[in-house]
Length: 300
Image (cartoon, rainbow, N blue to C red; front, side, top):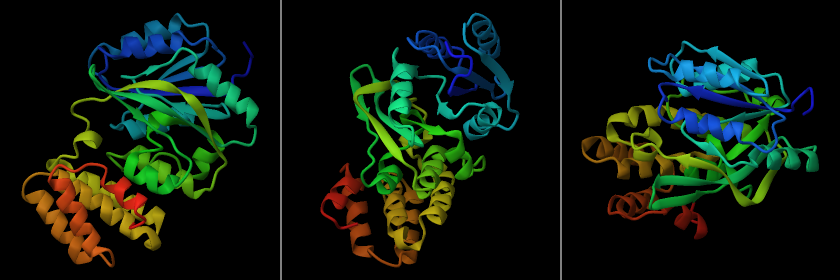
């Protein structure tokens, strides 16, 4: 193992006593152990912190356990990035699992593409034992794909510390879709991007109460704040993308909140109003893949 690893795996942890052992075990099981780990406890009240300490003491690679008092995954990830000293940062969630050759494949891609600043891959998204979907990373049309489909969701890439800091790092005021918001800023830096093809690099276990997945009406204001930040990054020429994303959220949000958001979008939108109405009608009636269909037809 080299004396100066090039990759830091950063994991925020908040009350993950039940899922944390498998996530940590997937790090221990890496075939290539030339990396460092930063575990960030985010005010856990269960046994997570004790588990982290015990695990850290038993590892052959360097592990640091630090604390972040400001609540939220983005604040914890930002703390981990501040502590990291390596060239590459790999953010990882405490309820997911790395495939055993994850680090080996990443280090190989880094060696083969020394000018790369962001390296992505596909993941397996486990909604249930019977429902496993592919979460993709695509370089083509990545700004649109990230906004609509989460191409730069946390589990799908590693980034150089230089690019991460150049883009401004995690926005700790964005409570949900913080990874998509960071992804938008990373893309605007026009980095050299590479994809690791032909393998699913992570098993992502989608939590039933995930805001990003459920897009509940009770959280619509939080989702809207994240979209406001992304609108600032994407600029006025792509404002209709944000309107479409908001309209999909509105259509997936039952009750008066969703309808109120729909009406507000239509009153404020500067273009594509008919298309937005169609998107709402299709999605609210159970249609899926709205953004993909409209993009394929070159309507958005």
